[in-house]
Amino acid sequence: MKTTGKLRRYIYVLTLFFITLSGFGQMPIFKRYYIADIPGLGWLAQFYVTHIIHYAAASVLIALVLYILFDFIFNGSGLNRITGSGYLKIVILAGLIVSGGLMVFKNLPGVYYGHTTIIVLDLVHLSLCMMLLCVSLYTLIWEKKWVN
Amino acid sequence: MTSKLSRRAFLKGSLTAAGSVAATTSIARAATSMAHTKKEPLVTLLDISKCIGCEECVYACQEVNANKYPEPQKPFPKMVPDRVPVQDWSDKRDVTDRLTPYNWLFIQHASATVNGEEIELTIPRRCMHCDNPPCVKLCPWGSAKQEENGLSRIDPDICLGGSKCKKVCPWDIPERQTGVGLYLDILPAFAGNGVMYKCDRCYNRLEKGEVPACIEACPEDVQTIGPKSEILEKAHALAKEMNGYIYGEHENGGTNTIYVSPVPFEQLNQSIEKGKGKPHLNTVKNMMADGTNLAMLIAPLAGVVAAFGKFYLSSKEDK
Ligand code: SF4
Ligand code: SF4
Ligand code: SF4
Figure 1 (cartoon, rainbow over the protein chains, first blue to last red):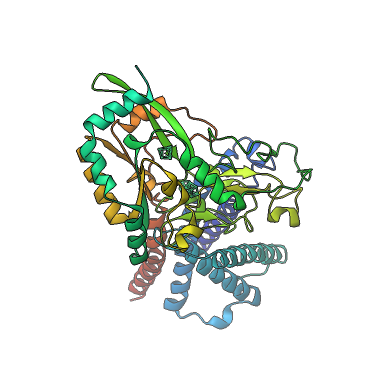
Figure 2 (figure 1 turned 45 degrees about the vertical axis):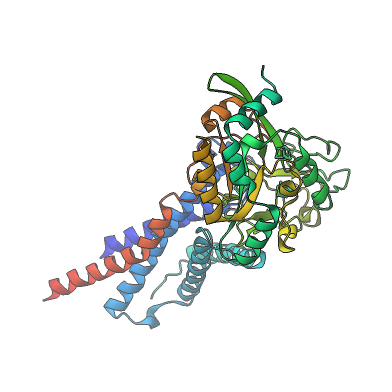
């Protein structure tokens, strides 16, 4: 039981790291600000590479989130065990998955979104990401857990 | 003799039938069929064998789109860091031998040998208007959009000039002009660098039921525009008649620009001058289809199955 918990956490942190980095890599900033010049980080300026990594990391994150959600449901563990910060992170993650999902749909052939829809989705996705980073930092520093 | 005349004489001799196929498609017919086909994307067919390289299309494009061209503010705001390139075409507006923010269409030259005779070909080049355009789909800021009639365009009021569209475009089509656009109102020193420009397939003319300017201006009827299925059928018939080749049908998963040439495109690609503002004619794989879409589809299912599997195993252990 303990090891699965550790493994989950390990996958979650690693996924969050790569998804955030590749997510910021969707904007043309890493090259401009020399970050992609750091040996080993050149891939951050290759848009198709960051695109694939973002999708791959998102797939892992979605699988993990649904695994935990259904594990919760199957085990019948009480929702009241989830902490306040846990709830907040769940809501943000759900928002990220929904806005991201809509963008994945947009990227399919034959799907036409207007400028406003795309801009709103981009801003919502970016804001939620920043919020998740802030809340995660807070829970890390103050050692807040997802569940009691 | 390698001259326009000999090339034309050769083509006129061997391609009369092919020419008559395309000739049946008048501009009027294209306009009517466009009005009837809201659903199917519009595609342009370019019969390279007919192009004489007169550049009428290039000048027509410049004329009708002049009001869309950038009028940058100078001096440009200083950009940080220094390596950020200033790209200024505002004093070189008359350049027509490549793509620039002020020239969205140019004529590429190629020579080739057909049946032992050397011929010269001229190829009008511009944005291909991809079926699934990476420039639109991967813009991180929503500046570009694709319309249901298949064209893609960049909104100059929204674009920040980061040039990602150019980097992800398989033909490096969009061109940047520094000193214009939204970035000037945000943090001009630290983010953005102008606006990206490219052929918008005369979207405003299409909206009025008119054909794009380059199509209308061509004295040789090189281009035809119409619904995708109709144009593809026509392109294949034309290619068959001239024993020729097609480009753009499968490139990047399909585009709304179909070239038909009497010479293989590999041969043309070797001959044309390529480089900045001068796109290649290589084969291009579908850039937006990389297998991660499938992973995305399987992911939720995998999560649920794993949770169920765990539950099933533990309930079995409990018994
Ligand atoms: S106007 Fe027609 S013939 Fe002249 S260069 Fe353009 S496409 Fe070719
Ligand atoms: S050719 Fe390039 S600029 Fe044109 S639609 Fe395709 S990706 Fe966009
Ligand atoms: S379709 Fe319009 S914008 Fe595009 S090259 Fe032709 S004239 Fe220029």
